[in-house]
Image (cartoon, rainbow, N blue to C red; front, side):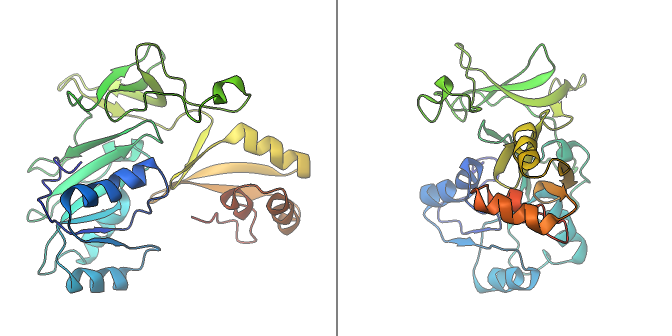
Length: 280
């Protein structure tokens, strides 16, 4: 990512991506440790505060959720004296292919497609500002399309061991790593005939991605039904955090309290808030 975004030594980084996952760590902490510049974590998001932070320090990179970067560009919030390159994080990689062109010619733009904990791929946009298909980066990540039509990854940026150790002997979900080192990300993809690259076309079946968290929807739904047999849990697209969980029940407050009591992830419990909006 640092190479694609042309980050220089001592480059300051201002990130609106929380380091709450492997991808968050790779996008924020690692470039900072390697470059030795200033790292400022901006969370939760506030446009006015972000503008103040940019004026207060000189940053070489501004890390934002992909859709949010375009919203800020439209408002002119990025057109300030100290222009920084933008690194756009795509929690839902399928959104990248249909994203608009980047028209800020004086601000470099690098897309980072995030595939849960399986890996990430950084691609800098060309002068035309259009999103690029995914290509293998020799020595860092290899890409392939499985027989099921999903994206497989292998290489230095991809886990080589099942984690936590021993989880494969339980009934819990875990990363299944092939004997040849390939990991099936579960994301459907297609080839681009003109370039040979790959484009992600949707999310993994049965999985929900909320910010840096991934859930198996079936397992969550079973937990909810044990509390309230008529309650349902669904996922809806979100331009910033990938997806949101929305819970429906006759007494949402009661279901939320019960989920909290059994120690479920707060994001899941928050799906049953009265306003039906899941927490980040």
